[in-house]
Every structure is written in C-alpha cells, then in structure tokens.
Picture 1 (cartoon, helix red, strand yellow):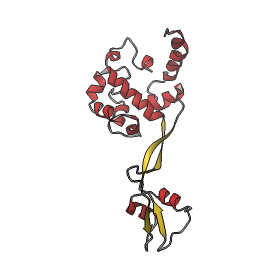
Picture 2 (cartoon, rainbow, N blue to C red; picture 1 turned 60 degrees about the vertical axis):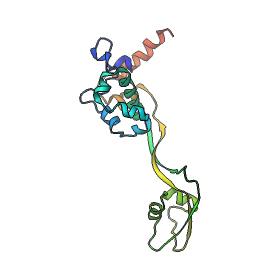
Picture 3 (tube, helix red, strand yellow; picture 1 turned 120 degrees about the vertical axis):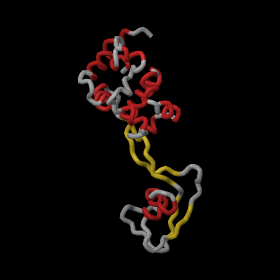
Picture 4 (tube, one colour; picture 1 turned 30 degrees about the vertical axis):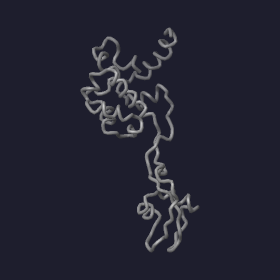
Amino acid sequence: MLWVESGGASQAWKTRPMQIGNLGDPALPVLQRAEEGSKLIMSKELSEAIKSTDEVTNNPELNIKAGIAYLYTKMAKYGIRSLLDLTNKEQHDYTVLSGDSLSAIAKKVETTVLELEEQNELQKRDVIKIGQKLKYRKAKNRLVIVGWRAFTTANVYKLYNGGGDGNYTEKLDFVLQKVFPVLRR
C-alpha cells in the first residue's frame, strides 16, 4: 500500500506515506474516537500517540502505524459476545422474583442473558418461574473480533480506500504482480 498511497515524487511521502490524516479523510477521526472496532486493533500506546492529528501527519512512522491500524479495523469482522469475568470465576445462584425477566436478572446480577441460558440449559422460549433457582457466573457482552475479510486488493480498495482513487485496485495489483516479484530480498 505504501507504493500506491502518496508516490515517491510527492512531498507527502516524507511525512504522510499512508495519507491518513489528510484534510477530509475519515480514517484518522475513526481511530481517534476509537470507533468501528478500532479500539480492539490498536495498542494503548498507539491510541495515545494518534490523538494529535499534527503528530500523525508529520511523523511518517506514526502515519504508517495509523494507516495499518485503519486497514485492520476495516478488514476485521466484529460481533457481540458474552465474555466471562475472569477475575470472578465463582458460580452464583439467583432466585427468580415476581416480575423478573432474564434481561432484568442479567442486569441486576452483572451477567448476560446468554450466560443465564447456558448455565441453566434454558431455551429462548423457556419461561422462568417465581422461586426458580438460576445459576450464573459474572459476564458482560463485549464487542470482539470474530473473523477477517479476505485481504484482496478489491476489498482493500472498497473498505480502506473508500473509493477515493478509482485506480487503487489496479495500482495495488500492479505492485503485487510486477514490482514485488523483481524485488531482491
């Protein structure tokens, strides 16, 4: 991607090789606000370092790191999953009260509906009854990475470049097919 972003003849190559942080570019604000799952991609150090737009646009190493973080943010597939609290592995009991629902109980005892269902072998349509004893462990619903999109040039164009350069896919294909094979390692 470095080969197609700014080009060696451009002055931007010296400070913004990945072009992230350019005026009007949506990528850097996404990372700065920890949106679209980017918080799961970036280290705490990178999250802190990119808070200054000037730093990202004037520091080529940071510009590359931010560009890669945005690429991975766009290529990841996300989902909400019930995650157990690893600091509290105890199994707890709860007695169902009048007016309780699984979601109200989950909120009250700091667990998830899925954890209640799994621990008590409940199906989605099962009715809980007053006085029923439910087992649970502490858990929270969290955004997690559940997979990755294929890192194809077409996907990089569509998801990372966002249509800014209509020739982006062709440029990436050219670099991969014509330039990389002749590079000496």
